[in-house]
Length: 423
Image (cartoon, one colour):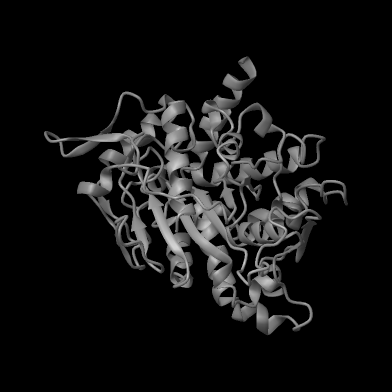
């Protein structure tokens, strides 16, 4: 029990570093389960997947409310908790996620790896999470999956779907036809049934600016890479935690080659700072990503935003609710008070944009500003448009069960799976 409390505290800190419940449905009786497509859950910044040892102490999905994958599997749903680079860029994470689901060697791409001066290939996944993904069954129906991402995991699955649908012209131009990863050739929009993002900073977050003003963005990035490089050379890498940074030579490949020199690998990663989640989460990085991403007309999109703040009519600010995680309560207050216009995204932080989950502005989590969206209507669910779900009460960690109510957490995800399964 003590170990769980300590790890829960660590997860809270991870959520804080990530800064650079009511039911969503009136009734679940309307959903008729088919159990045809598996669910793949993707963690956020500084998170972990089901294959890592830390997940046995406190699972990322479910946190202090228990292992969510075990619960959902017990309800008859085929669910997997993927493990991708906790500090890696959306591109690198999408490549890792693709290889892990399909069972292949991670290919970061010829053009991408050359641009960011890291290795083209990562580890090999000999066992696929979904062995028949993208294949036709005996009835001629393609095996699809549902993707669910928390925080930066939502950005990861958006990029994965974009690449599956459109491919990468840069990678096609730089690679011979017999050597290119299937991820970069496109034409696979029908491999994904739905994408659900939870607390995802689609349009960055205002918490970035006070952190930048304090110089914490550079400090956090540098210390994070040093920590990853040290841990990545230890017995813990691949067992307790997994940093997935072998492309920079920072971590040992589990069961494979050893990492490069610590100083050289950390310097390489810092030199290529734009190839990291800490850049992708900045306003500049978010604008750059959103300009490249297109929504797929063949996929159902859903987004959940959380709010842990309430409006003060007197002062015109948002203040944190009493049940906000105390470790991130200060950021909730700061985000609820900051009023300005973001020079990069053009977002005016005032009014409804002050509400937040202590790390992500509630409005930012609803949908990418340049993509089609509408409020969720259970009688008219469309492909190729963001169905914006009702705002949920809770902070960034509550969304995955951290210090949340077990019954509410289970109900939220069970009803989500039931709804997605009925599409």
